[in-house]
Image 1: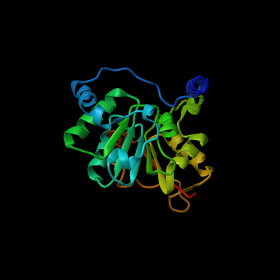
Image 2: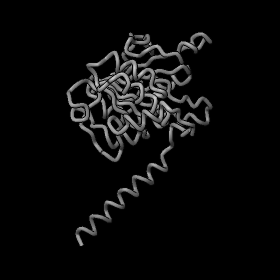
Image 3: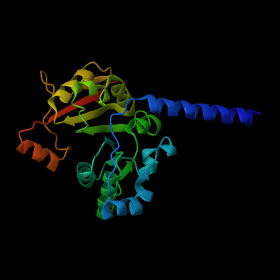
Image 4: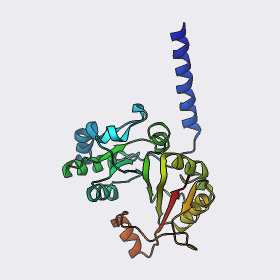
Length: 245
């Protein structure tokens, strides 16, 4: 009977988590698309070694990477160009990327594998699920959110990932002194990010006094996407907040 009760409780917990996942407004839309040969090779050849899943539960970064090193976590790495550059240039850091779209994950894994990188791991999951279920509190040195979907129509602003609840989730995962680095090419979203973060408990803006944004730091690679936008006259806003407590 105790074993039966335990199984029922476990089932109820799983159902509650599933129901909550269904109710939560998602900040992304899953797109379908064909995989290239190279992207599929990345999944087939390198996912078994470097892929992580929510089902694994909480991870110990030192165990995952086989060493202690500063941990950088990136949400929504797209096709992975920026993250790959960082992992290549900052070999003294460990990197975990989170992306829901399979082609981007496959491309990143193929290129990282061909380059012989060992300091990069990836989830193909909802970032909120990963943060809640897999990342230890106080374990992240730098959390990156570069060019998230701006959901530019006002009626869709509730789908933007940067919200008050998300800010506190990020705060839990960061070490004291850890940084939350956001970048967007939508000015309205940049203003929204500052609005949310300026009242978020436990954070301070790293911009110089009287400013809200910072110049692009060397740690964020200058991508082709960004360069194309600049040629079209688009601005890019970098926002970095530090966890104070």
